[in-house]
Length: 92
Image (cartoon, rainbow, N blue to C red):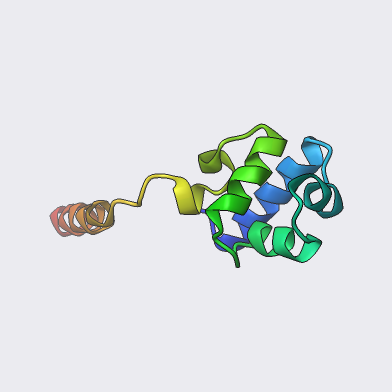
């Protein structure tokens, strides 16, 4: 599982690969550098700002913020896997 820091690092890598900095995204979106930084770090969930950022970068919301816009984790899967592992351990 990817932790929150890895999501932030991934977003920064995409920004740099696409040739953008916080300053250039701020200029192109019409928002402050601080607002863009808060969004990149996951402290702001403004869909309006997120849409502007991904539009400039040419990626999707799911690609850039998978933890916010991607599919929800399946809570039953982890408990199901734990049950399977417990059953396997008791057989061995």
